[in-house]
Image 1 (cartoon, rainbow, N blue to C red):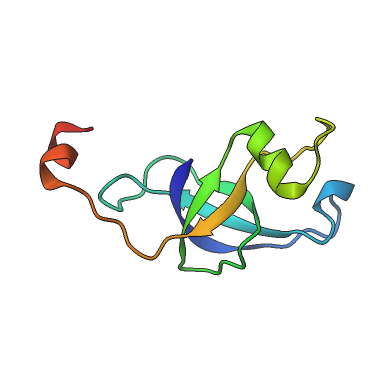
Image 2 (cartoon, rainbow, N blue to C red; image 1 turned 60 degrees about the vertical axis):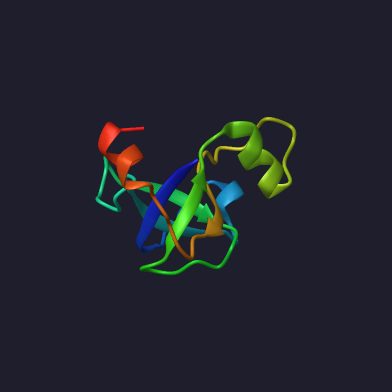
Length: 99
């Protein structure tokens, strides 16, 4: 799972049938201090998140299929937002060591 910041909504008029009826959001991964880390990703929203929310994104295929109710292994969706984060507490000593 990754901690991310929702940066916007993605709209597509032409898409794979698996995306029909799904809300797609652009998410920026964050490190333990809340700073941007790496490239943005697209994720299907299952928790009604919005721009500016910190969220947990699952990027494990089997977990994504379970969240979306598809167990046949033919789902072209990798990233699913599974939670909105209210607060993050990081031990300063652990953060400095890179743990």
